[in-house]
Structure formats: structure tokens, C-alpha cells
Image 1 (cartoon, rainbow, N blue to C red):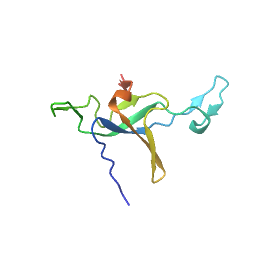
Image 2 (image 1 turned 30 degrees about the horizontal axis):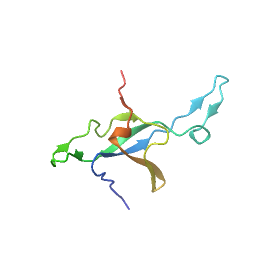
Image 3 (image 1 turned 135 degrees about the vertical axis):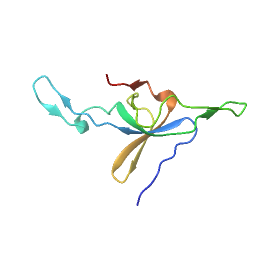
Image 4 (image 1 turned 180 degrees about the horizontal axis):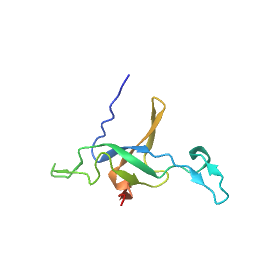
Length: 99
């Protein structure tokens, strides 16, 4: 059964990117043994927050961008064995752009 997460307001849905960490000794720590991921891909964005006058302010992030966020930001959601984060745009620290 499929599903669609459609965030409201200034919220975004992020798929955390699982990263392995390699120690200087060559030992690779899987994601489960290290700290929570702080990098993810934006899967969905809300329409933006409303001002007191009712005007929509669009978000600065868009679907497909990679972003970084604090360790414990957002609400974790598990669906069909996958982990997603739903957080406000203001909790996103930066957009990660590859050169």
C-alpha cells in the first residue's frame, strides 16, 4: 500500500541519509553504532507559512535538495520500514550543494 506525506505550513519531510563512519584504524562503524544522521534529502515541502494578513511565504528549500539539521530536530516517523523526519523549515541549518 503506497502513501504520500504532504506537509502542512512551513514543514518539510526529510529522508535521513545513513552514513557509515570510518575510524582512522580502518574500522567502519555502521549508522546504528554512531550518532543520529544530520544529513537528509527533502522529499516534500509544505505550501509555506501564512502571515497575520493571510499571505503565504514560500519555503527556501525544495524537493530533492540535501540539507543538514540538528541531531534531534523534527519528529521521527516510521512507515513501511523507512524512517522519515518531519520538521519546520526553520530547523534546517543549511542546504548542502555539491561542487
